[in-house]
Length: 479
Image (cartoon, rainbow, N blue to C red):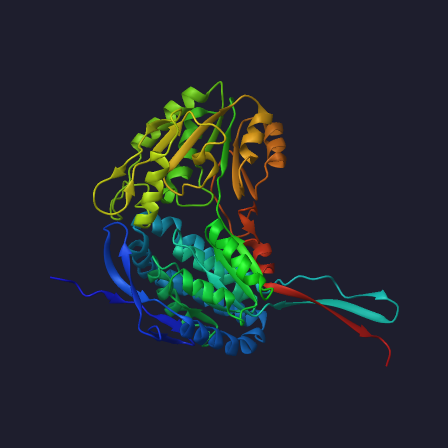
């Protein structure tokens, strides 16, 4: 006996709508491998409608005062708290994440981030007015860029939606947001929440696949395209946006080095690194999955990490003892499996290395050692619960190995030597360097990388600035 699937819909101009041509795609719960909903497979007509709604709403929203935008965002933050259990249920169905961790690790930061950008709305900065030429006064205006086309990923669908819409709306822009085709449920619920606060057309959601995203980025209306996703997707967006010189904001892949020196407390370092590597099944661009350990403590560290991995469990969302849930989709599961199957002969699987169960997309916590710098699994992003371990001889080699990848998003250094930590923080070519910790983020500090990890910042005043443009105004002092 079949169960009727829930119907998700686009949110355009203050209304929930099906795709114009009626096309849909099934949405699957990765913990069970079973479909639970359908979502619109939006095409050009839907993108046109959303962009038109956002463009129509933009002048009115642009002209609101910072205080008005702040009040709206504070109401949204309050609504997120009031409807937290609904958001958690939608996100767990989206992703298969543990319910308890979603409640404690995602809802509070999201609410805090919305409130941060509510405050940022009233802190627009620019140079003070002054006479830089005799008889003329100059000043700087900060203005919203316009309509923003935004594409969110499937690893943190709910939180990444917040990272997208909160600074954009705080700055006075309007938004058309596309969630991943595998995780639209929480974003559609977010649209309902924002729709109860914001004027029609300020926030719009268009569900769909890569083609939908391409149509959004290539559409002539948006002034800015923002994406969190893979390097391949980011390069495609940058290329498409270049055709009409849209502003582009890219947060892409990562391959974070975790540099462990010989003076650390091994047990403490392993505890922190294993949690930061396996959290969210390693589906995090900043995950602590590429560990570099000084040769003098390498074997001891690998043994301790393998033991920690064997003690970590993955499982269903309602199991309070699991650290992480399934991989997001069958393609991602196959990607992780293929990385392990292609390991070179000199690599050693110290723990895990296999699928867990025959239902859903679960993969065991895995540790791989014996690797060389040019091995595929060192150079490419796995995006799964796999931690690799290499050894190094001295600080210079640690830096060489750490920086020797195409990505440059995040990194960490583990040492008791303060001077060494400061040297490493300077030499590591990554947008974030943690010292004796890995993965914490705060709303006040920027998140974003270099090289093929993209450009632009999320969070912080820098992230807010990315959604503004700068205008010079000069006036004559003569009558």
